[in-house]
Image (cartoon, rainbow, N blue to C red; front, side, top):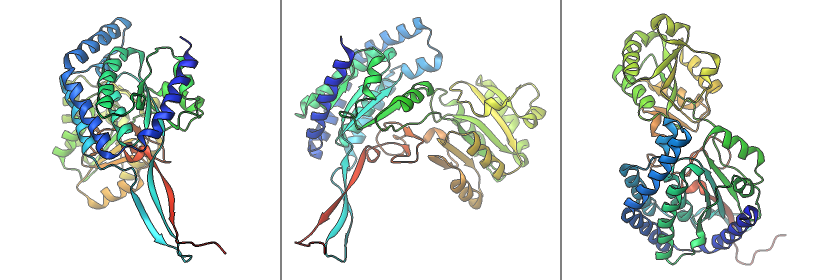
Amino acid sequence: MNTEAYMIDLGQKARHASRLIAKADTQQKNKALLAMAKAIDEARAELMSANEKDLIAGREKGLDAAMLDRLALTPARIDGMIEGLNQVAALPDPIGGITGMNYRPSGIQVGKMRVPLGVIGIIYESRPNVTVEAASLCLKSGNAAILRGGSESVNSNLAIARCVQQGLEAAGLPLEVIQVVETSDRAAVGHLITMPDYVDVIVPRGGKGLIERISKEARVPVIKHLDGICHVYIDKAADKIKAINISINAKTHRYGTCNTMETLLIHESIVSDVLSELAERYQAAGVELRGCPLTLNRLPGITPATEEDWATEYLAPVLAIRIVESMDEAIAHINQYGSHHTDAIITENYTDARVFLRDVDSSSVMVNASTRFADGFEYGLGAEIGISTDKIHARGPVGLEGLTSEKYIVFGDGQVRV
């Protein structure tokens, strides 16, 4: 196979399909989404069988536990894909919405209309459920998509893609609206990110190395995030029970996700109330603790934290702990070492909460809630295409609106400019 010719062919088909899906009405798009959900539900055995092939191959290649967890398709995750499709179908269609219509002194009316981006290229690793999330959001937002999953999930992705194609066919939409790259040739990614004639935006979902490469080499705009170095700060005015429950959940609910807490910050005045119990529960869960000098004084058996620890996304049962003298010190730490992803404060002090929300420079900032809620599904977006830590165009979980743009529209009644 000539990979370059193959990718250009996909791009040409996607560009043509993007013009057709942009004109599709809401009913037709929803029909496709619901048909996809039905196809996935009926193909459970096939999906699990395909996924098992990927898991076996992954174990033979020596993939670590976090990667295998992301790769696995469980019955609950299949349920989640179906629910996500149903939820996206129930969401308002953003396309064609008109806002901000105002009369100008000339008599013209000026406003904005929401429109699709066009063709979206999505590059992702491990998690096969991304195929459904990407397909559903691109379709509902009126975009065509070219999806390139990791080679480790090729069997799962192709099995899911067949369900997606059934949904498109049932709604009378072109199959080229959602195309999954079938070649495992790594050169396919290089071609996809350098085809501005056919691709309007790239969304990478994966490890830091992948995203750095794409950001460096792409000739197409990129919506990205590099790391998920998330923090929980236990304020001096924190409720002890909330602080412990949230801090445990934020770290141990799942280790291999970008919204998992990697550093715990604790105000010195509340350390005696929470640290020993937290340490006991973390260690019972098998979490390795690394601490600052003040933490080591209270937990002498743990590993000293290095400068590198504060800037590390572990994606593993490892947690760095730092005791701080003030909320300002906690905020400064987060803004210096964090990745602008998700950070939370545990406090009963309204003023402290407001200051934290204002001063922490992250795409999601939370009060008295686990960082694990930083997710498009949990935010009511139905699903997400990724979590952007950029500040331009889209920030935070990228749902339907993040995959659209706006154009100015003008209504006149014969006016001419003088």
